[in-house]
Image 1: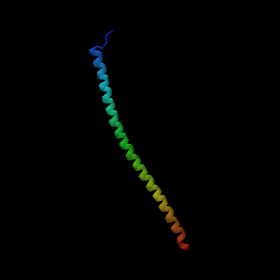
Image 2: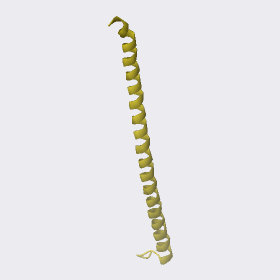
Image 3: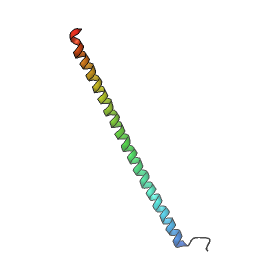
Image 4: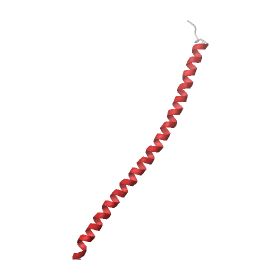
Length: 72
């Protein structure tokens, strides 16, 4: 049994390694893109939640003012 792999076998292994490196790089880029999109979506959701809560608060304040104004 030879101590070193045959050149053909080595080149196939090297080729697989290069393929895995390329795949890893593509996945890294995809992961960064998805993380950025997730950050934008979270920001939009947080702003939407803030505005919904603000509107609920403003309605409750307005309702109180309308309800209590006649007696003041």
